[in-house]
Image 1 (cartoon, rainbow, N blue to C red):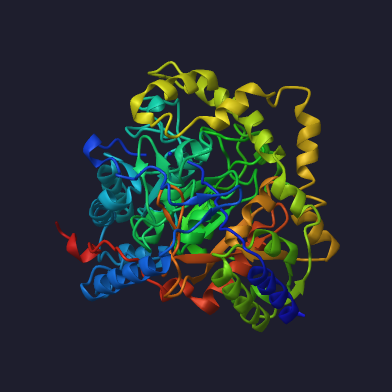
Image 2: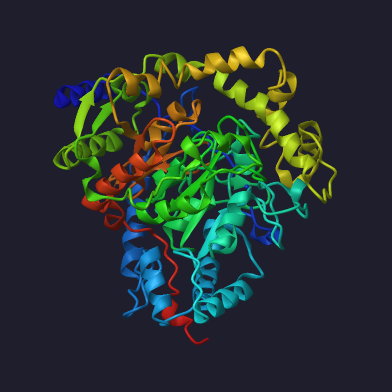
Length: 602
């Protein structure tokens, strides 16, 4: 039966001329001098755009070979080689919470050493990748205090003294900007930290800085790129030159992939955590909407926004999620957490977590979304079935999402987000204690953006805002019936309906296909590395020249489940991760070289 599913999908790919699916990302960027702004070119006229995507330029196979030779040269020159640390000094490209805490506990290094090493690593790659927009000027002082606490015998938990980067739409009441990637909010002040930032600080984490993102969580333009913001520039993935980083948590994905911090926080409305995880060879946990507070996180949609971790391992993501999850009176959606109790996500990380579970495969989704660049992804996806079955899972094919085709062509999901954004943005802006550009509404923001030169208008338009300002918002009488109709795409006609009809524990999909089917109903997803494009893959670019498919670019596997089944999905992803260790099988083309041993005692 599984072979028949594989055959049907691959026959579909070979029997029709399908163009690659172009889906722009979401997004926020650091205050950098103008000389460091990226040199991304305007859309390439040689790229043919269609509604579903773009057709690679002729000669892309030659380009792939050229880049592969560059990659091989980089390896032989030591560009991507990372030095394993001596005993007690884990190599930062792969360092985990457990490894770093062991070194701190044995006093082989300090939190101050970690901050110095991570800052040095950021500086090594940031001019190329534009991943980090702000470095916290207080990070070293905070690290010293946490080191002193440890010396006095006080230990706050697994994040004590570990540096973490957060997306530049998560507000902090400190010296750092919170901009959503826009010059409109540079210098703006908030009354307090976002709840998730406050929880990280209370747990002993060091907020090292903020990461670049697709501007406004990719909710401004209809003709922009993943990972671009006016404030932070164009970020790139680390596995191929000019790689599309996806987004909108682009900088968080890049930073976690390269060990620029222990881990990162991102946000997701539709794909903004799992897509960067997908193409940056890391784990992305998109929590159930309501499991983590969005208070003082620059919003897109109260119905779909969520905050979650991007890390190199499932267990590290579980540690971070355990800290940031929980009820918050400042976000009433968190009152829906069952019994008000946060599960032990770390305890869910068991090798046996796949034993006895039923995993659905919605074959119609694979048919609808497959393109001429996704065949390697599908081959790896089918190969994962054997691993999952060997771990005790049952694969149930043809667990179709009955509304998938209608959903894929519908404009209603975007209209719902636009209706939320108008109101939710205004609520956030009203909370600012200092608003240097007097931006109090979406109309104000559009005027600023269209008149401020560094916002790159009209090359990057304000199309989503234009539509939002012309339509009704979520306080209008039209909203509720439209919202209920939109829920059908994720409920009876989508993910939740399939889970119920086929008695499934989860649905599995290539991450590239997964996010939208969970987004409308606020359901969780966990993405874990699954494979990477092989040598000889033709280079496929978007209209701006970002590379979407090429040799060495990774991709992931997603586990999707019912609301508040986050712990169950984390367990499944952990069991798969531990049996495959895909992350260790592909290397970035660019890797920072600074290690802990280089800064100890400096």
